[in-house]
Length: 70
Image 1 (tube, rainbow, N blue to C red):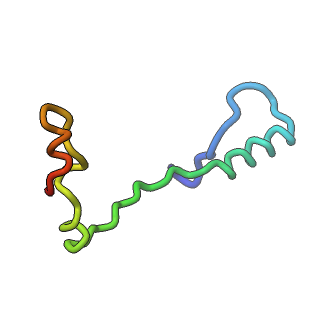
Image 2 (spheres, rainbow, N blue to C red):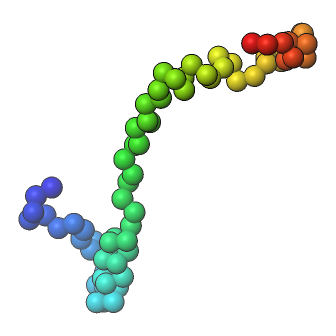
């Protein structure tokens, strides 16, 4: 987009000064798209304490296996 191109244009109708001011105000307060936050790197110390599975898997013997050490 060059500096000569308008940011927006009125396609139909003749807006009043108040309507144009409302449009410009709405564009100015519009939230900008957030950049995707990169996840913080996890240290090897914290990574080693996480269990391999979130919990016991449902199925035959799952109740008994839930009390066993992992």
